[in-house]
Image 1 (cartoon, rainbow, N blue to C red):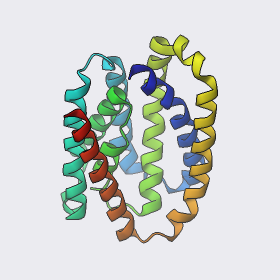
Image 2: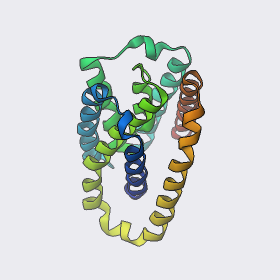
Image 3: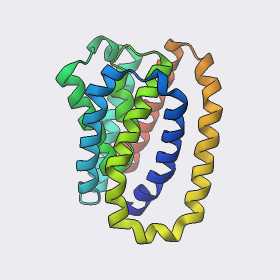
Length: 203
């Protein structure tokens, strides 16, 4: 599990960097200021705790949070919540913390960002900028703890990077054509499915 999380951080950072470059003008700087910096701090703490937490218990808690987030998105509860200030900072820190610990902060980050009134492109751009900060905080820890083992999987990492780049470029056209309501329902649906899967696997 520790090596898998470390390996996936490299293609994740490559795809995130490309996506941010292409959407750099869409980042909501106010949301990023509250949310993104707190996520990076949480990601560093989570990476330091990485591997020291019971995997099954963490997966169950993480999955349960995603299920609740998906259901909240379908009912528009997250939008009515209207996170600001300390609420946004706390949500960012928690998303980064879980991301650093289990290597998958995207679900929690998406759930938290649904509470902000962002267009689909601003949503993706702000989430991407936040993700890149989290990657910058957690990857040095992974390289120190798992760097030698990662060298044995360079071909796999290369294939994953290519897939991420192709998917990032292909997804831009879909994003331009997707209405905001459909976008939010799609994100909420994916959160719900991922959460159910993680709870079932942990149990």
